[in-house]
Amino acid sequence: MKTQVAIIGAGPSGLLLGQLLQKAGINNIIIERQSPNYVLSRIRAGVLEQGMVDLLREAGVSERMDREGLVHDGFKLAFDGRVERIDLSGLTGGKTVMVYGQTEVTRDLMEARTASGAITHYEVSDVSLHDLKDGLPHVTYRKDGQEHRLDCDYIAGCDGFHGVSRQSIPVETLQVFERVYPFGWLGVLADTPPVAEELIYASHPRGFALCSMRSPTRTRYYVQVGLDEQVQDWPDERFWSELKSRLPADTAANLVAGPSIEKSIAPLRSFVIEPMQYGHLFLLGDAAHIVPPTGAKGLNLAASDVSTLYRILLKVYREGRTELLERYSAICLRRVWKAERFSWWLTSLLHTFPDTDAFTARMRQTELDYFVSSEAGRTSIAENYVGLPYEPID
Ligand code: APR
Ligand code: PHB
Image 1 (tube, protein in one colour):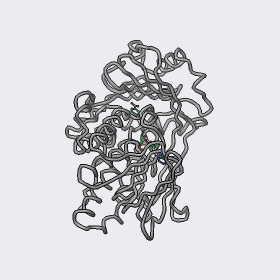
Image 2 (cartoon, helix red, strand yellow):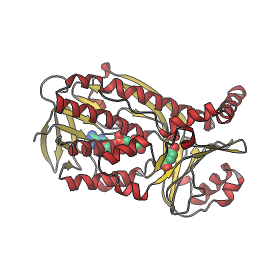
Image 3 (cartoon, rainbow, N blue to C red):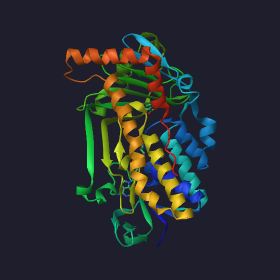
Image 4 (cartoon, rainbow, N blue to C red):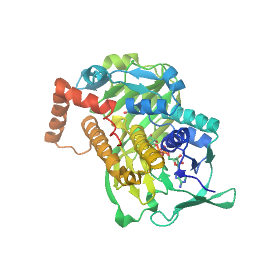
């Protein structure tokens, strides 16, 4: 088998890149370890930056998002008995975010891919990447007990944090930057009406809490938990009561509890590798970087990587501009590090850290107070939250 771009992984990065390439007439094949249903069963992020919304429109997969997605032009920060609104639209010259679940984005992309006739091989195993630097790049894998070989011009490593792509790069050529936080997020999905129209990020002495949503009838709520906590220790009643205890009193009074549809604990981590490419292999999304979810940046960073590689490949195939390929990693990393900074900063400000000394605690409180009380501070939060601009490729 032969294709122009071999894509490893059918998460949002792989599917969105595949769809954009397909529309531009650039041939690609996706290979994915799991089944489509497994991929769709993962509950992940839910806030799309304007840049990602525009990219989904360009890819021709925005019809349902534009119909069902919720446009948010602000969010709330609750701390020290105060509730402060960040007016995203007013502070950024009209920019907004779209609340639309990653699961739905993935479903829309899968449907578009099926309709386009592009090939995805699901439930493959033993994926291995070869000749990345010299010779003919190719991918080998097993499917239904048979060994396959896929020859290609380029490989897009879209296989997430635990994928094989990053592990195929010689370690001595990579630099790793990592921080693991001493807590996780316990998330609950429920068919209940959202407690408020906008997202609420709450900092509380008992720990951080977040009120988010998927639709006018489906909510996604989170509470900060210790790293030793297990989901089975959190029956629904305990979750709802803990969430209410961390929210402002009038918000807690309005909260509608209900049976959870999904409940899971995710650890928080910041992670970046440099560079994001090796020979003919390019890494995108979670394969190259992880952010803690506090700034809602994970999925959006995957989208900006996709945009960068897509625009470079367009120029490579249409204008022979192969020299652009060398710039992929540097272009991505400039934006990645800024999103890493924002996610780390917001995480540090809003969570309760074990063993924080009194001075550090006061500094955190004062930083939050300063940022929300100053127009410059609120603007800084808003411009990062709606997403920093994508770098042009020329
Ligand atoms: N071979 C093929 N596929 C693989 C392999 C492998 N060796 N290893 C992992 N995969 C698949 C996974 O099963 C998954 O479907 O790669 C896909 C990676 O998808 P995600 O983990 O969702 O990563 P990505 O597409 O980069 O999505 C961006 O950012 O912060 C997050 O929530 C956000 O998950 C989202 C991500
Ligand atoms: C979510 O809805 O799952 C969500 C929203 C905002 C975040 C993180 C997660 O910062």
